[in-house]
Length: 125
Image 1 (tube, rainbow, N blue to C red):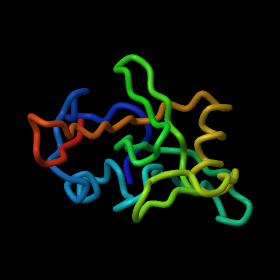
Image 2 (spheres, helix red, strand yellow):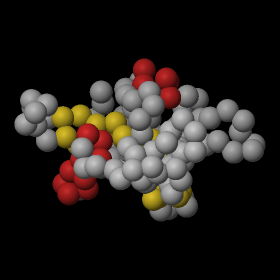
Image 3 (tube, helix red, strand yellow):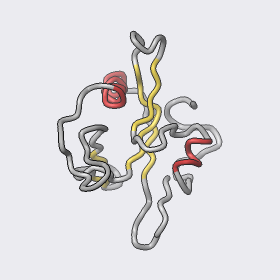
Image 4 (cartoon, rainbow, N blue to C red):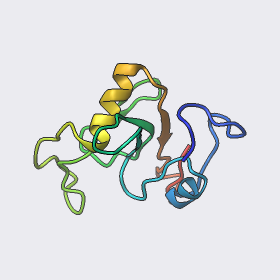
């Protein structure tokens, strides 16, 4: 996986046509999950941090207003039907990594889903 923040040769605004393309390029390694993270050192004792998040509006209270983004995190979502929160999220895995990144002020790559009426297929930037 590639480092956090900007990636050499991939300027901000580069379009990716699906998640598989981002995965193959090492930009976002999760096929379904929105938070891609790594753990430094041994997984039991190392601190995790986020390399990228993919905001696709999969949670009922996700909001993307261009300059600001309300990103819900991961877990507790009825992903297969209503997409509503059915339980509380916990501070583990990707959520913990996102918290750690915020505390350390580590840059996090943001990938946004570009699906609308004009774009029938999902793409990401």
